[in-house]
Length: 394
Image (cartoon, rainbow, N blue to C red; front, side, top):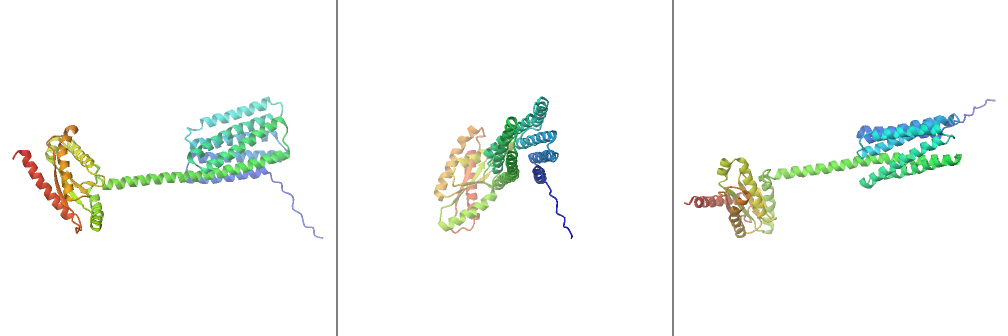
């Protein structure tokens, strides 16, 4: 009779499975690092690699029937992984480098060596390693909690909770080792808790990386919008005076003309030119000439309403678009003229300067501002001739 061979029983260590899981998490973080190139991700990947090695070493102790020095080496390697987790969080917060981390690792090695040398029982070195891990993990929980509070990162909050849970299990393990031997049931319960917490840490880290990426994208988007707004503003304003330029004049006039025709709103143009600007610019220099133009721009802008538009349309020529009837525009334009001379002394500018103005009404049937601009320009030059003759005493 043919006998069918029965398969043998294959015993698989839980710590070996956890080691493989740590390696998988390390690989996923390495992939994220290639995409993001952030130092804290590399340190977390290194932490999982070290954790995988530590769990593999401890699994060898399980197979060999409990080799004390294998287990101690694995516990200290796990403490090193905790230091790397803390290093990644500190690096994200702008930590300077590896000095604190190197000092912490050296302290753990000294602590483990001293505990092993002075130990009167087999549990003291292990308890020291677990207490060291608990201290480092508590620092990890504190750092992650701070990031969660400041940045509102869900991933950081998940990590803070997971690190806090592992802190408690490691501290409880250390205390139990010093007081009495840990039973099989307790060991399995602690293993399950640590495994669940490690899964939470891995999930929190990946979520943290994506949240950090989204934050960077939002900040970049805000910067792009701000740059776009600056470019748009620069495209419609005069660089010297900060007033609207001729390009924006063409855009605004079409919009106001539509409202003017539809609602029969009064609309007037005031053309302003600086008297004897060329003479001042030629004799005093361009720096003084620029000061004059900026002073005129500020003066006109301060003396007009928020609803009015002030444009620089030429070298020393300005246009004010006023939502009022021609009579009101005439009155306000003359106030601009008469009040200008008093501001020159305070601004330390030549007293020979002045303003010539021309006012034109924009008719309801107007299709553009060509006629109104021509009329305002003509009346401004007529006003300039009278003012020049009066200045020369003719």
